[in-house]
Image (tube, rainbow, N blue to C red):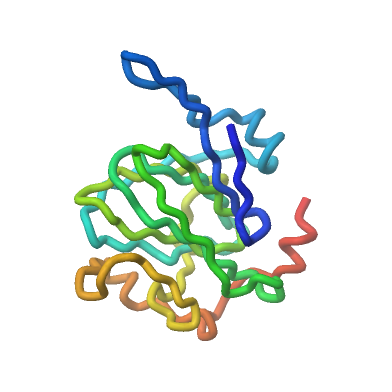
Length: 191
């Protein structure tokens, strides 16, 4: 597993070592020991999968403590633009984002730590998207910020008139209007 650092500390791209031959390919999609040695210590407790069509945009979501989540995301089929936004108040990178294209062909994974909002836009005709979470989904701890907040300046790489949103994702506040965000000092002092 190769780890690629991003402009925001803790947010990393994970590239598996792929073994190809005339039959196809093989790779190890996750190894707990290696992940803890190279990225961070965490224990994933829930795996999720979604299927979406071109133009679907999901996000920008997070869960509040005590059910905050780190996620390790990947695409099995198709392509997405995956985005992580730093929502840790007091962080030197607060409000900044990292985006990466994940595809079924590049097999890259994206690790989004707790303290970040996450979302993706579907760039292909169809996508199958999988992710691991280190805490269970808890509806009463849901949080989100607006995908189209102009202060975030995210290029989702799909025309605005082609964006398909859930009713919930149409109503999220801008970052500066959000009632609850993470505290950077709490995040820095975590064990």
